[in-house]
Image 1: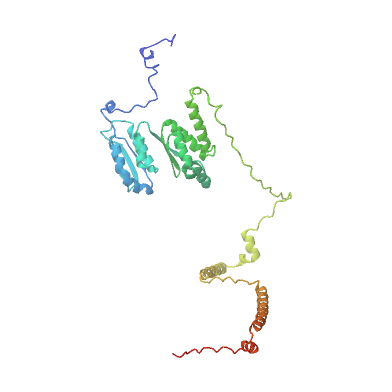
Image 2: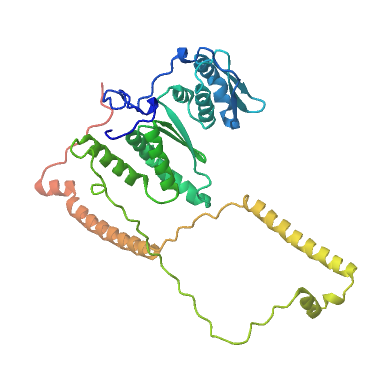
Length: 370
């Protein structure tokens, strides 16, 4: 500051300019004594909400009303028009709280839960609604890139919330984010890069994690981090090119296709009267209609036709017959052998006893005398 010529008292160095104890980035909480007179004019903001949010807003409106009442803001929910309105009152002291209330109703309209949206009324909490619907024209491509931002089981979104320290909600054509100014700036950059296919959100997460580690290192805190950060190159997948067959060059132009009048002249319809033409058209229409009715009738009746039962084709019929004949022959042979064995075993007992000189024993009667 030496050699500086001061023209007036306002140019003189102040004692708090170089005070290390003062944090210039700290946001002080508003004190109502700073604005005891209140607001001179009534300021109001209103926003529309979709019909599917009507039931939830009706249930959560008492919570929103009580939260805004502490700051002296009045709110109104119009279900007929489908709008929410916030406005200042005589009790309002903080001039910026009406802007916070406007952000609150915007977040509620974008499907943010009421308990989460109320946090935006705090001084250290900001919000940003990023419009992504008009960044990509193709709807299928837009849906795929939006899903890429969310990730499988919303894992990518959770990782982004942890790294940036912001609450993120993807809903329809917008992304609602709540957090600090620094975090919201990072979220906007990540979302736009993802939808425009510039960089994948996972790569952004890797870079932010590295920056967090470098910020915690006291030796590298004040240095340039470009040499530490990874540089991702976009890889273009080579697609297969289909070669078109080149037609032989002819200096003459292709023949002109026949016009409607030429076709009518060839068929002879050009010379027919309007009455005959209309009758012919009506007849063609009736024929087409009859074909369509017959086709629809056939489709209706096809439902009631039973399906054909599958017939099993016995390929081994001849083999089975051969097996049966072989079994019959083997049974006959076994029966003959068994008969011969029985003849040998069945010896007459009376003849055997006569030869030996003994009488055969008398059989006991069944009915013995008592």
